[in-house]
Length: 132
Image 1 (cartoon, one colour):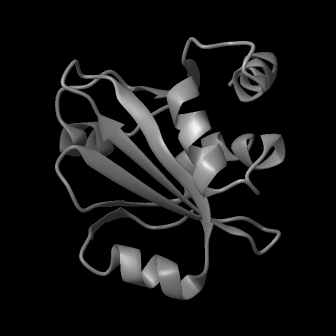
Image 2 (cartoon, helix red, strand yellow):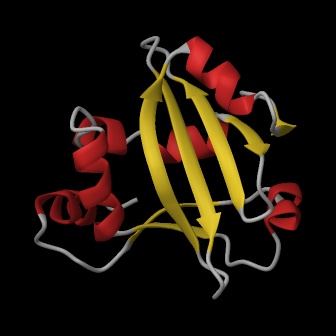
């Protein structure tokens, strides 16, 4: 992830989506279906996230690649992957990535969670990979 592009996206100077990571695990790609492995973050998602989670800033967004690479991966919907990540600072994050009809993967939600919230969210999901 390019930090300058992320800063520009967060400040509103950039409207074009940025690549935050790629899914390198063929098993996860097989589950999500016909999609490109790059994961994008859009300006529209940033705007939505600011309304819903104003406490998430550059420092947290910078953790997105770690959350995707090392977090527990689960699936509740055939077009979505859920990543639950426990950062070494004891902060927990949840990332939801969704496949579009064009086969692109976008982060649609990124926020902090508590252990109880994480358990509730993942209760009906199929765990695909344990937390690294």
